[in-house]
Image (tube, rainbow, N blue to C red; front, side):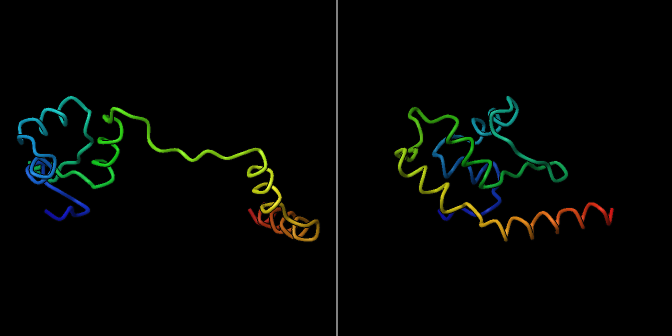
Length: 98
């Protein structure tokens, strides 16, 4: 089954290989975020992914960075004084226009 961006509880149940009653129970308990259209529920793929992540037994694979990596990121993101001055002038102009 292809997982679309918006699914019915029945489609989620089929995808997760559980009963629709299980999906509806998760919705009623607030564990699975859904929205209503008339009398029907719909679940976004993003909310399904969050539900699966929050109910997983392990930690998500987080990247580990060394101190050198962090220093390099900071240096790469640093802007030169001229660019900083231009940004500050633009910010002042925007605030003065309000």
